[in-house]
Length: 241
View 1 (cartoon, rainbow, N blue to C red):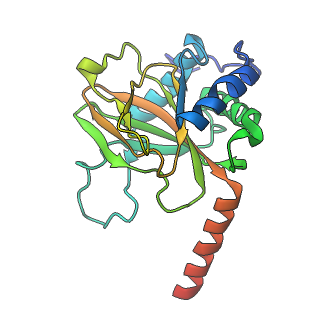
View 2 (tube, rainbow, N blue to C red; view 1 turned 90 degrees about the vertical axis):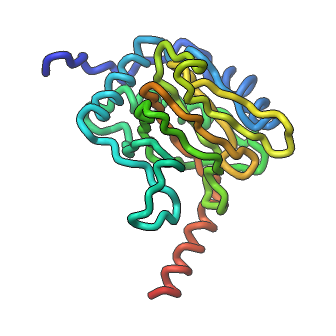
């Protein structure tokens, strides 16, 4: 085992939290009524530490690259718009076992939400985006994850930042819920799991971060909208051929 490495975590770990109760009594009603929900102390410090160790190692090893903007022109600087560094993982790669565990538990939560999420029917998701804001004042300007009906319906973020003080470190995720004059400020606290609608109901921004800020993000797809988006893409490719 390499120096400083942790033993591989058993993948059969079962969280003590009642996932069904969390899904049906918290996540579903809050998504429906407010458009977002977060839960603290989601998997506990031991698992969170393993995930943080794996993510920070990726960062240290240079595996994270500048995040891209949709439609961004090559050669045009955009760090004032989006300053994170990212990579994509499935959670099955060597050294990503703890990340895979987080994904499996979140998948289970979404499955338990079932058909209670309005008209949405979720049956697949993206890979996990590992993201780091380097702590140099980098942020992400106000945007919508899915402004073009690409299929993404739920954004889910797992935060990994110990001893985070938003008054000093910044890095708050600010949501601007559609139809509301109020904003929701979500601090990126260690072992916090956040859900929100990915579409135009929830424009949001990451405020400038003045300490290294880590998170995992996955997007869950509405089956009908995703299928329509794929068909649209095929037609566009055909027209350009």
